[in-house]
Image 1: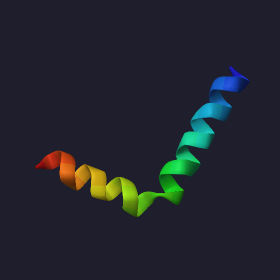
Image 2 (image 1 turned 30 degrees about the vertical axis):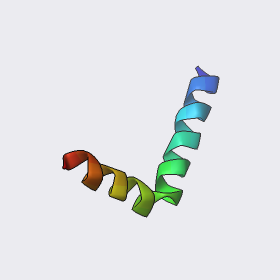
Image 3 (image 1 turned 90 degrees about the vertical axis):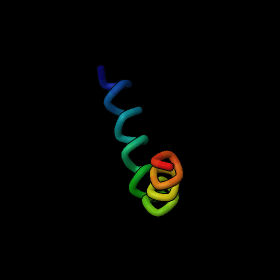
Image 4 (image 1 turned 180 degrees about the horizontal axis):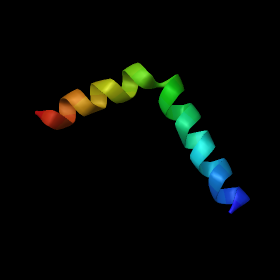
Length: 31
């Protein structure tokens, strides 16, 4: 369980750090 939590935490940090990048992907995906 601790390992999974760590992975999720790392993913959250990635998304926060690349917020604009991921927002761009979402906009492209909508079209």
